[in-house]
Image (cartoon, rainbow, N blue to C red; front, side):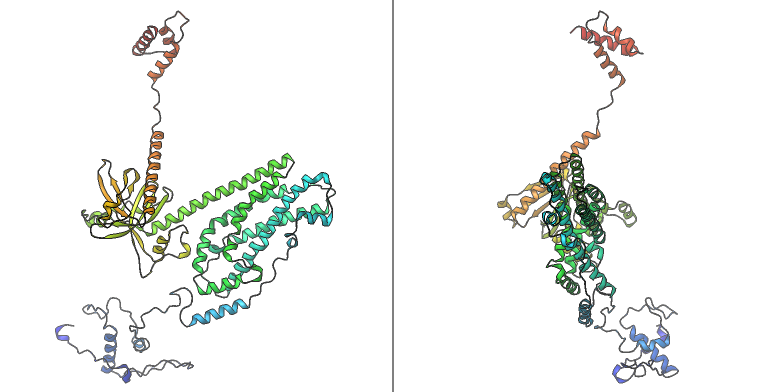
Length: 615
């Protein structure tokens, strides 16, 4: 206010003295609208309005704009609504500043948690799972081929080789029955369908079905088609054995192993490690633990836990080549042996491709997390010696340092936590050894745990230290520029000399420029002597591999130069001069054949001929 506009602020009255008795909320069970008696007319109402205005702004930083009673950040409300805002239940205090939104945290918080858990248990108890193993081939999965044959007929003794092949195919069929009925169907009918049922009743809505079960539906359908086709082959063989003495199983193997069987398993296996990691994060929740316990205690699970069921497709894929090899060994027909062997080779190649895809995917996920947590400080923050005016800082932001950590360019060889000895303190650092440079960072934890990544999305191959940093929303700040391996020296230090300075298991890393001048040095300390030796060995091996790869690139980038025409003519002349059994001078043979157009070339041939003939 100006000097002549002094106005006494209204004295705040105690809320319990009835100053706000005119505004009240309906009691519990009362459905009438809140009653409100208008305040006193004229100056008294204006004074009350001013009092409420300043009461709500007493903890604010007020900026007075001349001629305008609106302040930055104000929430504009009508005069009638201002009376309700002054109700004691709506006034904020130190105890009511916590967020009360229902979606502020996952799950159910507060008093409703017990009721939510009780409702979840009631929902599970109302769910009934019928027997889902009622398939025609269910009774055959525990029988041997000899038992099946004896029930119908006995093969002649001159077909024992054929029976051995049939036993091998029967082993493939019965093992596929067990895999489909006892693993895939249990996963689908008990675990996945139960989770879907709960989500339709608004429980565990934030659990991602794909991240946990991947393409289980597709895998189950493919396996069912495969085992059902094998079943009908054996059934037809038993029914019309007299006219068909052999099993026609090659077409079924070709259809499924060269079709969707291997592909669907590859898709599932690529998601397996992430699914296991996601499952471990979900187990920490009470509501998911109740669902998991109910499923695992089901009779049709046969005491198998969810992790044991999730790994079944991986084991099944690796067993297919062994079963096919057994069929190949017991086959006598050369055409069948060639086809079975080619199918086995295809499955083995699919497994090899899967291993490469798993490594690539793991490397990709790891680098994606590294790009999130590794912080590259700008030049003016990293080294205070450099002064960069604000008008020039945009120049240094053109090349983003985050692109250095690209999964397509490099691989992470080794990583770990060490201690950096500085002049006045010890600093916890985290080192990343790539195939072309070494990165030294310092870890920064966020104790408030805000902004951390979803644990289920983290790469399982990350170390426990990095997982903790990511979970807490921390970061790894780069201390110095990346050290190229061809500019890096690692030295082991004498423990006796280092113990004087209180250092144990220490080693030195030097960063040299292209002129072999040391521009940076890091005195590092490991927790144990074995960790120190491992780091030195890893860095030394990485330097050796990088140096060899650089030498190979240099040789491949500098091919032999193309032979000039003059030298090509001289070489051809030298070959022609080998003709000794003719009396014609050599240069007379050379000149017409080469079509020499200059005296310079011709004199060169003459000189070469003379030196050759004179020995």
